[in-house]
Structure formats: C-alpha cells, structure tokens
Image (tube, rainbow, N blue to C red; front, side, top):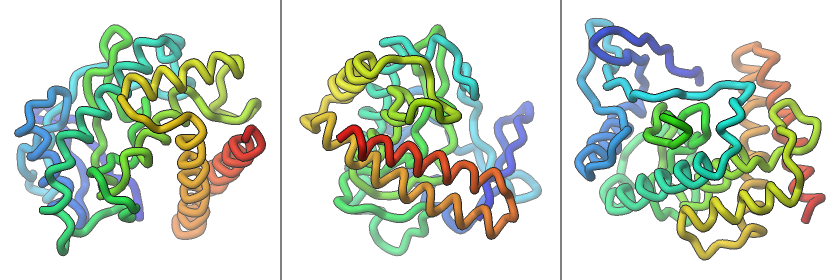
Amino acid sequence: MTYSQVAVLSDGVHRSTGEWTPSVHAVLRALEGSGIAGIPRVLGFDEQRREVLSFVDGVVPDFPMPPWLWTDAAVTSSASLLRKLHDASAPLVAALMGDEVWRSPIHDPVEVICHNDFAPYNLAYRDGICVGAIDFDTVSPGPRLWDLAYLAYRIVPLTAPGTEDDVDLSTSERERRLELLLTAYGTDATADSLKAVAFERLLELAAFSDRRAVDEAEPDFARHAEQYRADAAHLAAAG
C-alpha cells in the first residue's frame, strides 16, 4: 500500500486512486448531501484516471505543529467537526456493509464510517478554528471512539514525553484538554476508556508501519513504529 499521489491544480485536487475509491466517493457524496461544509466534493476523474476533488480552503498544519493548535478552540472545533461527520455517516453503515472495498480494516462495533486519520495534519483551520477535513482515502466502518481516540492522541496530545511529536504541556493540562475534547464531541466515554482505545490504535499503527517499512524499503516507517510503541507504553504506564 502506498499513499496517494496528490497534485493541486486549477480545477481541483488530483489524487491517485485504488480499488477503494468507489467506497470513498460514496461516503464523500453522502457527506456532501448532509450539508456539512469543509468536505471535499467529488468532481470526477482526469485523463490519467486520477480522481478530482474540490479544494478545501484553510490552513492544514504540519510538523512541528503551530502554537495555535494547542488552544481550546482548536480542540473543541476539531472534535465538533468529527461528531458532525460521524452523525452524518451513521445512516450509511447499513448500505455500505456489503461488498464494498475499504483501504483500512473494519473495526467492531461498527457505528459510523471512520475517517481513520482524523488528525490536525488532515484538518483545515481558519483563525485557529477547524473548518474542514481532507484525505478520506482510509475511511472504513468502525466505532466512534476509534476516530476520537486518534484525534485525542494527536491534539491533546497523548504522546510520551520526549518523543518526536510531543509538546511542552503539563500532565494536568493534557487531562483538561482531553476532558474538553470529550465534552465537545458529546460522548459518555471516560478519559480512561478513550486512552484504552488509543492504546489499541497505536499498536495497530505500529504493526502497519512495520509492514510498510519492509514493503516499501522506507526506514522512516520503522521510526514511526517505534514512536507509536513508545506512546502506547506511556499510555499503559500512566494507567
């Protein structure tokens, strides 16, 4: 598996496709029909059979993450958008649990269509407020907490001190931000239950990254796997 090749041209965002593309387009069209703003629209295909999607306007942050990402507004607006996407996708689950091909595994319990990479580097912000999401290639049916736990991992964050993507925030501040995220999403899940899902998510990501390191002869993926395992161990040790 390789990441999609992306070209931003005047008529939209051109991306390489795969056998999962029809499923992704079905999800995007349904989300567009729900009236949620900030979601790529499917515009068609170009002469190279790449998909063409509309451009989502906003700032998509990259590492090292900007200081404004560690504000309350960034946390709450990101969690709120995820809730909207999940709620809009819930009615699709029954219709999309047939012979559809997904790029990512299906996880139980199936409640919604998960983005599976809902993190700041795939979110668009304006004035520090999350206004959109991109890169839906990895969507698949799964539980709400599967997505929410990964967002928490990246935006609280739940990283281990000293790891590459960690930020200088105290433990008490991270706990406060985690509760803020849970409230903004609107869930009865506890912080501990979300951390438990994040632990599982990180171990799966580590195994996935190990496979990519071998399949694509790319040592960076091995480094990512090491970080995921370090962060998972930190979550387990923190209880």
